[in-house]
Image (cartoon, rainbow, N blue to C red):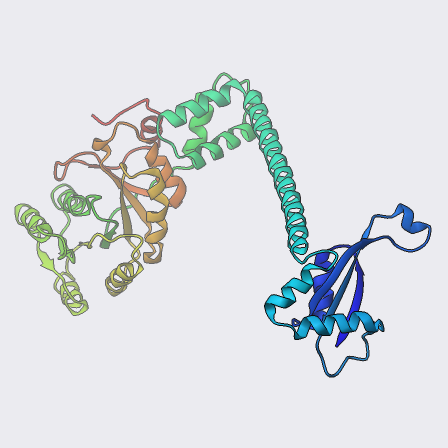
Length: 399
């Protein structure tokens, strides 16, 4: 029988030491509050004296076994008795075992209280930080000049993207005096610098790519009509859009009306044959299947046809009605096709034109054409910079 006394600050400390030194089979014989010996003990907080024992044939050398024979006999007697009798004997000890549980609960409660107080302090600090940030933001708003307010309002009213607005306001502050009354003209000069127009004659092969529903098929029909009927070029028309119901028949009808040769391509081998058949044409226009910019597999399939054609004259077709948050994913999704310019469609289907600048700002590519209606071939135009600026600021419209 091994018996040991521990002087500890609390029962948690006692339990840890007892389990570590005596093992999990040890039992607590007694516990009582005591003071440290000497004068210092009079002024110090009370400690707990815990007596524990374990039945063991071999005692560790590190343990100081209590030599009180009477106490040892008492412990042996308790351990040999039946569970019911053992409980009766233990109940006669100075402090019952149940008190240990109570003290543990008290300590757990105190720890929980400390955690709650810490959490509340952190929350208060976060709230204070938010208040300071809001106050700082309000101060920024108060300090904004009248011209900046007007510029921001004009751009917001015309559906400019927030990122574009922030850039333009910052650019305005860098270039112009806040008190300049010609803020509209100054703003136009900033917008003008972001517009690039590709005014190059179309020859050779030209491919139109883009998401579904932006009007690629109608756009390529307008281009074919303009080149064949107005510019008097020999045009060949190819489509690989065999997925959309009616797309082939629609383009075939346009080709027959304009007396333009037309070919449907399904495989890469078909593309080689079509290129050979149309080798004498001044311009070969190729319509592609609308693809989701998020579907990388579909974009890769389209890339195989684009690579087969071997041309750098690739246009991304995107609608002016596209939501601002969708513009950037579309632009980035088709980047792997290395498009050279953009064609912006459906200007007749919207009343605000800030999306034109949003598209040009985010893609950083020149604009080739705009489509402004359903009439083939009339409703495809190359707009001037001034026309684009006036449209984007609400000073002009598409009738």
